Image (cartoon, rainbow, N blue to C red; front, side, top):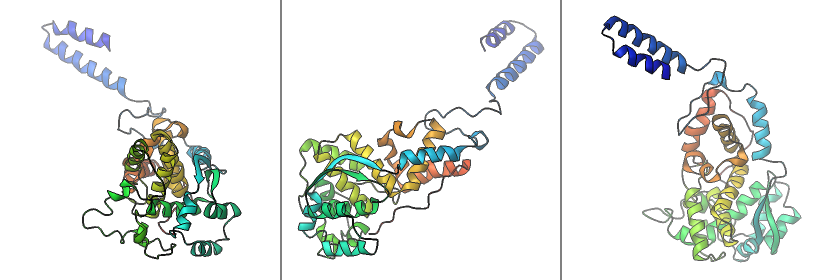
Length: 323
C-alpha cells in the first residue's frame, strides 16, 4: 500500500494527464483486489457491534459445536449455586404464601416431591442450592412464591403497581394460586422474609434492573411472570448472602438457562461463532441484558442471525409461565 501511494505522488508531479489517469485506475484495481476476502477462508470475527458473517464460511460441523456447548450451558449434573437455602422457603410456607397441601398435590401428578424437596419446604436447610434439568420446575415455583411475597423496594417501585396497573392482573400474581389465599396479588410485597443492607439492596436493584428473560421484554424489576418473580427472589437471597453483581449475573444466567434452554444454547452458539468466545468466558451481565435475554432482543440479535446462517440447534423442551 505504501508503494502504491508513493507511486501516485510521483505521478502527480507529471504533466501527462493520460499517464496520471492510467496510474490512478491501476492503483484502484490493486487496492480493490487487496481487500477482497479469499473465498476459501472464513470471514474474520466481527468488530464493534456489526456482525460480518457468511453462511458458506461457517464451520460445517456446527452440530458438534452445539453438542459441546450443550454440555456447558446445561450440564447433566447442573450447577451448584453459591447460595444456601436457609429458612426462607420454610417461612413462605409458614406465612401461607405456599400452601403445602396444594403444592404437594400439584407434584403428585408429576411423580411426587423428593425427600430433599420436602425438606426445603419444611425445614431450615444449610446446603447450597443446586439447579438442574430435573428440579428446574420445582425451583421456579418455590422461588416464585418468595419473589412475589418478599417485601422489598424493588417491588414497591415496580411498574407492576405504578400508573394504572392492577397488581392482580399479571401472570405472576393472578397465576399464583398455590397459597392459602388463592389471589396471588394479595401476597405482593407483603412479608419481610429477606433483609438486605443498603449496599446489598443496591446490588440487588442493579442486577434486577439488568436481568431480562426470553418470555417477554421486561426486566426482573418488572416481575410480571413466574420466571421474573422467581429470579427476583433468587437475586435478593443471593445479595443477602454477600454475592457481588458479577456473581449474581452468573447465577441468573444459570437459572435462565435451565428455564429457557433453547434460548441460551443459541446464545452460546452465537458468541462462539461470531466472536469465538467460549461460554465460560462470556460476559454474563451482557448475556442477561435486553439485547440478548429479552424476547425481542434475543430474536433480533441471536435467533435471526443463526437462522440466516442455517445453524440453529434444537432442544425439545422449554419453560412456560405457569406452575
